[in-house]
Length: 549
Image (cartoon, rainbow, N blue to C red; front, top):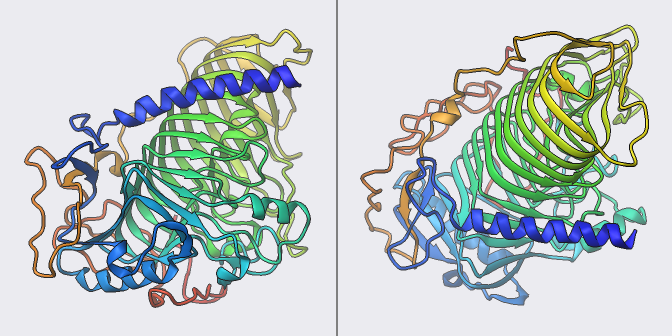
């Protein structure tokens, strides 16, 4: 065990170095600009530049790692919110260690972390407000009670950016992990970042470490770019998922490095009867150039909470090392809905328990009200161009008795088994059906080998792929209230110009003068709470009706 852990740490250190080099030389969408600013006059990539800026220190912030700065964050953002319709604003977090509990963001706003800035989440449980469970989940995930609000939180927002020079957000999660293991948690542990009922969101060029629970959780939102972030969790920590798009549409996740005690990316859309009633799928998602280490979970999981549906997911050019499985589908009777139209190509895998894993018996449920006759549909699942080494089992594929998972296609796959691997190399039940082309070692009979053509991969682009980021001046300090908006670089295309997206219910958000959404989430309006007001999740019968699929 000691030698294995030593090898794991060697591999981890090599990939941290590689990832750091990649992130330091990270490109914007066009590959023309260095995102990490290094000198005065440098620029950073964002969906929109801001007219007004302020430093946290102007509102009493103290970066000594001991002083609680929650009020400073809240006061700063409240002040800057007045510029929503005047070119927007940005809050600069300068070098230092900034202890804080939760604070809420505002629209047309950028939170910018200096490279030597560290946000430290408070370890005092009473510093965290308790809010209602998510309506598509019905209950908390750690307990059936409410949940602690996330460290960085926002709801009913438009045009929000969290970025910087690879500054750090440290959740100081160990105290939460220990309490969870001892069953001393009264409410669901907080996430690091959660943005809900919002549109036009960017999270980029930051490092997240030691989250108490999930790291990044966009939910009930659209038009989302998550780019160039690093997530580091203790590999034995519980539920520290990396990025979890949940009942969202039009999402781009790219160029991220994640070490997790759970799934590196988990695609979700609600839990059992609560997710079915809420009825908001996750769709139009692309994940590319992701590197993952997760010895006990998946590089990308679809589910298991998928009761609003998951469709049109595209995955390309991803790498996993010492990870339990690659792109895994998790569902069960009671989930309902569907996982369909999944396209995966270009996986490089090293040291895996499974390459392909689809399971129809992932049986965790929120309560005893689950209808086990709500059977999920799994169909049109495509994998191609896979190279895997040191693998224990090539595949574990099982559906739901009497409800076959259909249209599974696997092509151009080379799997090198570990010396310790024992039969069966492929483990399939009759509840799965599909085909394979050019796969070694030979697959199970349920996936009959056929000649060309290879599995499908969509050729059209998602709207979010066409969004180009502007190049904005790196903020160096506060600006006077009458300051003019910075001028983007001439070579930088406009992002989200003419945004026409809507919040749930068809309610148009207040947009910046140049602002378009490339997709919409149509649901009933939810009144936005004040900047620091608690979020009251509506009941299932509130006007949050499911959008048409």
